[in-house]
Length: 449
Image (cartoon, rainbow, N blue to C red; front, side, top):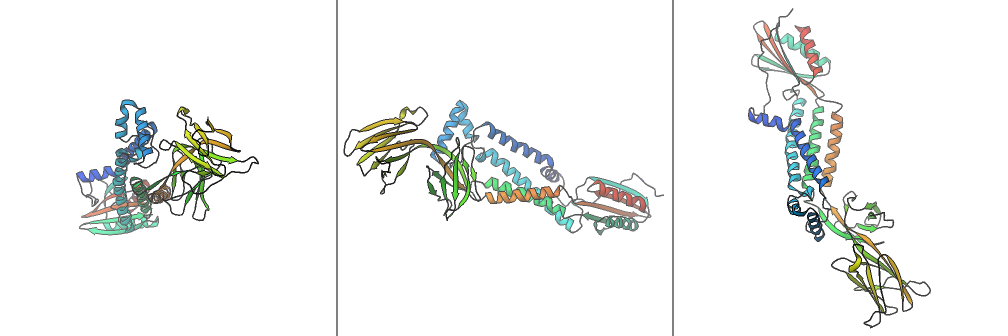
């Protein structure tokens, strides 16, 4: 029966990282506690985004963006300017969010470096960087070579790769099983790092373009050469059906766009910036046939016109060349929140209108043998955005999820055993990554000693 003792064995080899304070800093930054703190900061940023209204994507320098921010700040009274300065109405571009993402990038770099180093060591059956979840020691009569041979055989029998190295009067046995699983943790850290860097750089390489869409209109995009956007029929509440068309007019994506309801495609995002009032105008003669109409500044006539209005362009003109009419449409200041319009129809060179009136939705008016039809409504002003950071974001997310799911089913196992011969006694000390590995070692020690 082998004699046992509580006498401590010789010290085990340690990591080659810097010791002392730097090692404690490293251990903290790569610990679950640090990740939990950053997760809380991330949740705090999302909480703020849920409390304060967030500016839609309209371009940081756009007039609409500045107007929106001014109105949002005004609703918070005296606190409004401070909240706006802190970026609480634009969390995605605020120092808080950028700072949290920067910390994530730094910590994930350390995690990736740690897991890469561990994976490379495991590839060489080097267990120095193993997770140290179990340790033990044993002092017994016997021969160090025989004890290590028994351990080596036991570990090989259950699938471990082993390697023996000598350091002075001590012998170290490294054992690793499913070491490739360490690459999964490295892949997860790398995927998260890629996605976080993409979020941090999001917007820096983006291109924005405002697109005003009327009924049945198709507008070519400058931010995506060859593509266009069309407004389709079937608006539901505050949502507009929009189609993204390719170079040949083929539909690439279709869906509804509205406030806080963007439409995503492979390389383009359509956000709802605001809505604007517009009027659809048509005219028919006594037999119900369409009468050509010509908008001011246009060289050709059409059977139907769509006229846009906003604060900078509160009135529009068009003509009916066949009958010599000129029609003026203007936003009615008495609309009280609901856009209303005033119209005036002039015959020839007359300076007094032959017909005039107001409407808020639809109306008709006869003049000079034809009937004008006016249909007012709200139409979408969209912002088309392209951002190359989307591709690394998606790639990083897919890589991280795949590696995290895979690593949940398998993990690397390793052990480091040191044996030192002192006269006719052997001092054995071991570190193990998990309870199963420790059990193999303990069983082998009991049988071998």
